Amino acid sequence: MKMTFRWFGSKSDTVKLSQIKQIPAMTGVMGFLDYKAAGEVWTLDEIRNYVDEIHAAGLLCEVIESVNVHEDIKMGLSSRDAHIENYATTVRNLAKFGVKVIVYNFMPVLDWLRTDLARAIPEDGSKSLYYNESDLGGMSPLDIVRKTAGDSKGFSLPGWEPERLAELETTLKRYESITPDILRENYKYFLDAIIPVCEECGVVMACHPDDPAWPIFGLPRIAHSREDFDKIVELHDSPFNAICLCTGSLGSNPDNDIPAIIRHFGGLGRIGCMHIRNIKYLGNRVFRESSHLSADGDLDMYAIMKAVYDACPHVHVRPDHGRIIWDEEARPGYGLYDRALGAAYLNGLWEAIDKAAKGRASP
Ligand SMILES: [Mn+2]
Image 1: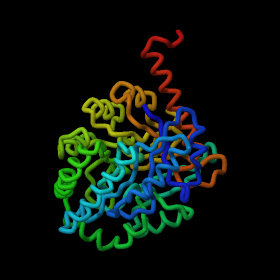
Image 2: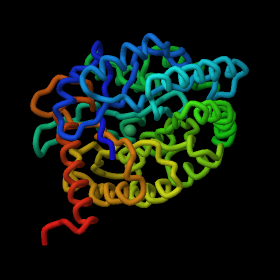
Image 3: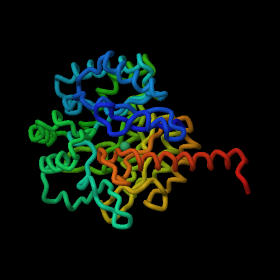
Image 4: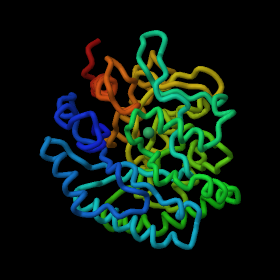
């Protein structure tokens, strides 16, 4: 396991690389150029500057997140070839600087969705991301976009880039005629073009699951269960067509058995990297994010780490969304403190699992 930390860049993140470096066993960051629009080429100079800064802090940058897929590719428009060409250029450019995994998603229009970005947890006064499907009842997609932007305290949020959402209503209309099967066909067209490039330059594409793990606003969503990902890995049969197994996104649906899903896709060699966090179920399609500790949520983090240890022990992982604690001012989900606690806890589980496996645990 290679422990990493999501980092948005020195201009955009409240967390400094020097702080990330001080978290025990931290090997690197999962990086992100948050100002790049979907479909724009990430240039060599931009990548060099970003990666050089990370290396200077004594950290690696082997995973890059949110190289967003342009909506025209997902919708299968004739303009998609130009966007795919740009995407291929970005893959080649990232490979030149040691990037080994690219995280992306194929969710139409809206990325991850929450109805509250700072829900106070009554037990301890910390704040977490929260979702209640019934709160969406009276809201249009445009309402939720405005609310999310308003609640983000001025921070850019991954997946909520303003230019992607500017033409929201037109895009939503276009999706009315796109079924899950059509979306999958468009996905296959993208993978058939991109995966050979990835094979050539040694970069794994890791698809992030839908979050929450069910369709929203009637949009087609095709990445929220083991069955969905079985279809995705078959769309283009290559170890470079892999999954970013996000325990919290898939785990938002209690029907998803996360350790079993890790063992299944890890066994197939199709887990490209992982986001690891816990979820607390509060009702049907109501949940909030808890601390990473098993006892604070409903996912068995020991069973998850044991599955990683057994099925994909060399994978890059990172703690995922943290709560906001200790009065930190930070991007919702991405403060330093709770994610650092999460990393330390996951490292502790790992050490115990490793020593037990090697017969070195004390009786
Ligand atoms: Mn995730």
